[in-house]
Image (cartoon, rainbow, N blue to C red; front, side, top):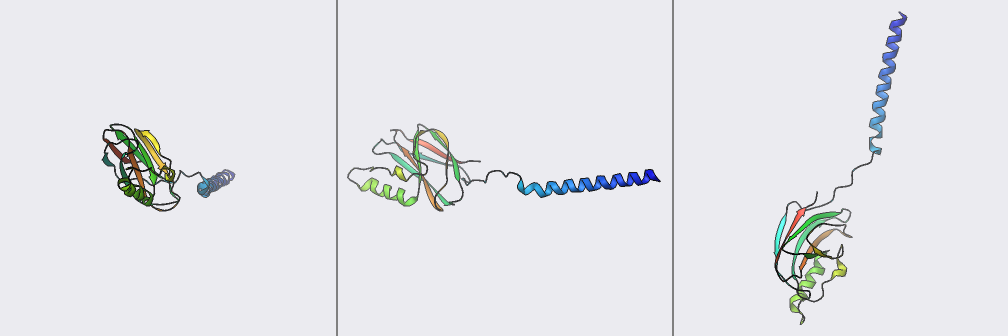
Length: 160
């Protein structure tokens, strides 16, 4: 009879111990470190040809990124074939104003507004992950400047 009581008591204690252990694990899950928040990126690759130019009159193209959130980092892979290029992320009004003055000023090309870049312009990139966290939500342009005399192809790809 004593043996039965001891066995039953052991089973009860083991069951309570297992139940408490499982409860502690589930209760501690919210306190575990979480993976970094996902960032925004492109949904599919985009390839464009950027005509050749020079330092004062570069070839240019801008990829528009609508709906970028200010509390979310944004990243994309940029690959250049046929040379190197300079990249700048900036808001469309700044880029559009530069493009407008580019062809209407007596000195075509004007000065590119590199001080408005988020991040700052990167020189001679062949392949990189371009990431930024915008100060405000909205549309952003990834401007590509080609100061090489030959045309080049630029592929913007999702960053995972």
